[in-house]
Image (cartoon, rainbow, N blue to C red; front, side, top):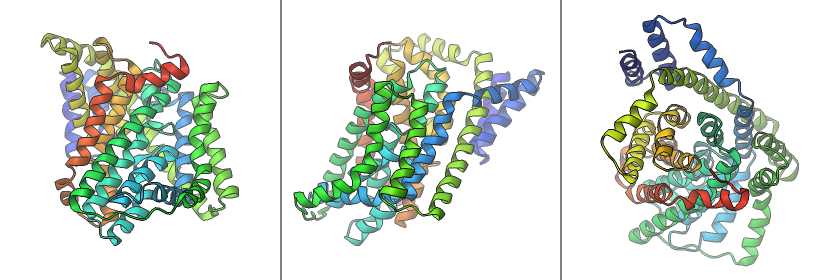
Length: 430
């Protein structure tokens, strides 16, 4: 009965429009009061859930991404992408995919990626005769690559939601091949739609133009190399890598590019504080929620139910993907990871999926949810920039959706896509 109250209270509050963090907290409090247990237990869980040293990586990665966003790094990446891919049919669309991938690698946030790249690319594409729905779909889907890149704070959240049993270094390297695969699938989708609609090709600036654009953009892109090299060589941990990323970004934007003003620095700091506060609140209340799910043996119940219907492993993985996608359509990415990981990770492992592979599957599903109403954060941001309704964008979303689903299926059923690099570079074995 208590589990029923927990679920009804949580989903009921979501339907009423209560923010996810408050819905989780209030549902947990109602349930603990029904059980007659001391309410202080929940707040102890909340504090212990947030009081983890590894969580220091989250504010640092968020701050680094905001500094990149406000420090003018996006413009240089756009110029590089245009010089490399702009001469292909539908060149601005192809450039958009490359630019979003590169900027997603340095900022680690799909929403920040859409905000930065969308503000530059969507108006430019509309000016050149591209339809607004195409410009928005290309931007919002390509930006999802940021969730898989080394600077993604959601990887840190997953590693800790998994109980600390997943190597953050292995997870960071595991995201690289799926990110490249997602970029390729998006390039194919953007090109096919551009050919179908008859969009023009741009002009190639010559290798000298590509070289100049690369020289300007490479210092910003080096942040990915610094993080990976430091972690793989053992010079610093993932948490320390996040602080190194902040120092590098400050030096880059203030002294190398000289594009950061104090006004924008304060804006970046304020935005990072706000985002970190939201994420840590979610982590705290999710710790309360996880305590109750452990108390009521939800993971065991789900595992027993799936076993009772005699599903094959591929069917179990498909079912998990569907459930994660549905959760992601109305919950924030961090909340979905924190709530769903303790439930579905043991089930996936029971049927033979590695926890690092499951982490990439989880991130891809959450990314898919970011582009799907009713929440659809990245889609709403893209539509606001493009001056188009969500309904109009949804009517032509399917080629890009198909590219994302194809990537998800390959990562789900071909373990090498997510496990090859951790095994090669780190000697990972589980």
